[in-house]
Image 1 (spheres, rainbow, N blue to C red):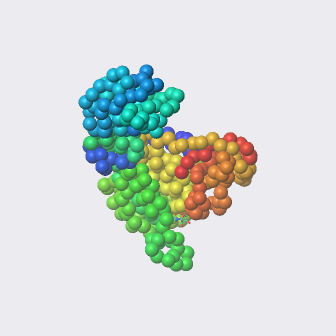
Image 2 (cartoon, rainbow, N blue to C red):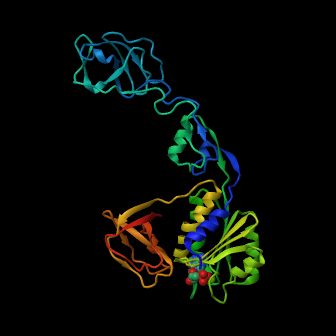
Image 3 (cartoon, rainbow, N blue to C red):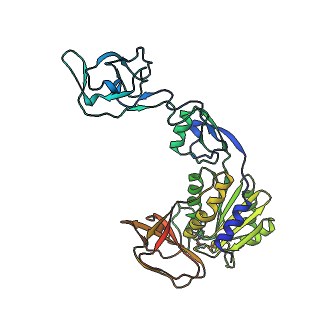
Length: 390
Ligand code: AMP
Ligand code: MG
């Protein structure tokens, strides 16, 4: 049995980065930048009014001001401001020469002879200054950024309509087991619906990689050999679930040997998730994930996800938040690092009712996972623990 930390290191050390491709802005969401993005403009590009109001000189705000121009957004001002003059200005419009503040329209009144009077004691300047956010030539996004909607806005602002990103990993998925049936069928006696494949497809899609589902294989050496051989073609990473523990029909390790997939480990000191394989053949990688759905979720989260992200140029660091435990947690054995689904309530962490690695709906309500280290059988109420978001 290998420790999670050792397994993580072995896996991450084996990853190599995929190639790059140019992708247009409308399709770049959830991809990972393979280049730094540099701004071609200052932002804001000019001194800009942050309010609807009157652009004037701060030293004149105690006086009545004459309006000399109306400046809408998108039209450069024609007149400059001097003593006791102002221009009516809209949010986003360019500040006229000579003005050093904008008084908000809500803070003014119009006198009978159509002058503007400021009715408050003081004002903010209400100006967004040229280049205060971004300077021309600034790196606005770094290589390795996982592109979220806020990054798309930045790309658009600096005119980056085609970005260089990492190629999406192609991830094959195969379920194994005589008892496994596709979800559309009502399971017969001793059958189980295939939840792993669909969970994994969603996981892979969520990461911005490309899933390729090969179906279910029976626990039959020849059939499994053929489908795994096929799965290794045209994919970068192959995920198998089930068939790797100590049962009479758990053939996967032997088949991987026959296919010259070098297995770096076959057992992990993690609960749930002990029967886990990581294998390499040339530039292809195989994860043999445990059959039980909570275990396969867990191992995907702990090992597969960081690995695939690394191949796609992203350094995945899950969000861990330290919070006090709301209820004491005990376990009998402590030979493996265990992961438990938890719910956060009133700034406290509560382990959810969880019956073990087949109890997939325990995860439905979970905000995160907490871990119990090897050698530890109790976590006390009030202990500060890391909650890993899922
Ligand atoms: P195995 O590792 O093949 O012995 O499977 C362990 C447990 O996980 C068994 O109870 C299987 O029925 C179950 N299992 C295996 N594959 C799947 C799957 N694709 N979806 C749901 N449960 C599964
Ligand atoms: Mg099986």
